[in-house]
Length: 320
Image 1 (cartoon, rainbow, N blue to C red):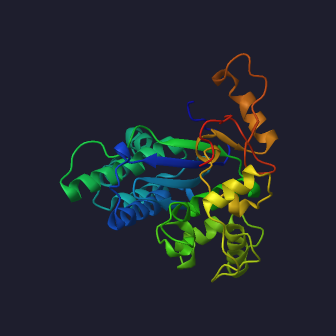
Image 2 (spheres, one colour):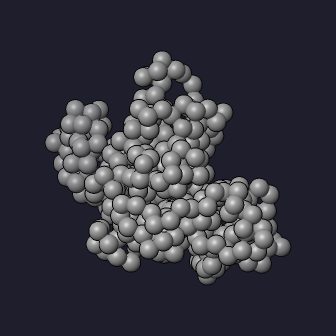
Image 3 (cartoon, rainbow, N blue to C red):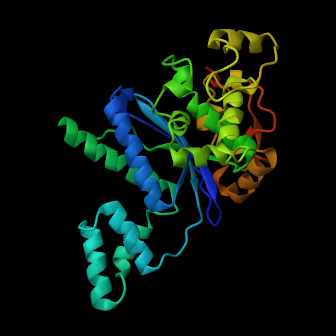
């Protein structure tokens, strides 16, 4: 199913991009470069990175894309100089046209502004910049990323955003790389704990608490299903096999336990949020769906996620 985007309002997207052939090409240096490109590009485009996780063969980004705003020539030039450098080709051309004609040429403006306020343009630039760096650094050639990226439109509500954010930050735990996401330095949670101001703002954006010291404890409580603290978990989480057995037996588990499983609805559900939000998006994009379909919202089968629906009804290998 084609990805769904919305315009004219702030939108949140869970974007996933995979390395071609599923190859484990992203070592620590590569992951660090991805994080660096992400931060710089987000600053240029005005996109808020809520959280992220860079794995060895794929990456997850949770992005809040604002409504596109009109920038003055001076504001645009300042952004270009910071992003491309004062001697960058586009920056120099913009400076020359501003000096000679009193404004930045429309062709240049369109080229630059098209990369702002659009998740597809953002992801294209993000992936291309990394591919060019990687191939040059390793002497490799050819495509680096597999096909197009996938994305889920996420309702910009606390319930929906915090669920997806926790799922992303728990990626290395599900993969068996660490017991605690704070030990995996290529995720937003660890970056925030290490003082990253942008990531602290991203995490606080979906929490009740607005103070970081209290907010980090609130988020950790979600990650571990406990009273939580900023430095440690109060009890161990169940192993994935035990979680699936508990669910199969009709047991009731908290969200933090469920998020230690692979839940395809959070990566392939197309749209995620409250039933009203998903149905509203269904109506707005009615032409994307078959004539027999009457409503958009579908439950997330097999796991307890009260208050959250998706557009795509996943049944095969939905929970792993």
